[in-house]
Length: 102
Image (cartoon, rainbow, N blue to C red; front, top):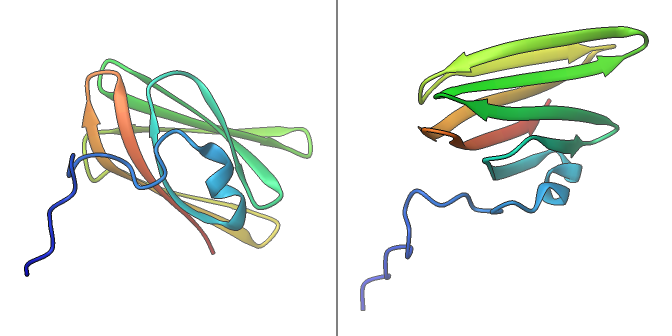
């Protein structure tokens, strides 16, 4: 018997459970400003008019990146620890993000 397709193929694996990112790997949906814990850091993400804004503050400095469109990618590295964020799907004010710590 063939496997059934997911109910919504565009749905994020972890939904809006940002705590799932604490282990360094997740796929989440962002449609409102969110604080996403990734290991010992926290990424702040928001979506406006088809653009994803990511920011992180550490040791008195702030890094901000803007991603436009599906497939957009950012790599943030602080003190040797990196985080990759890829926009898997972007529709209006909702984005599905793949997040992986490296």
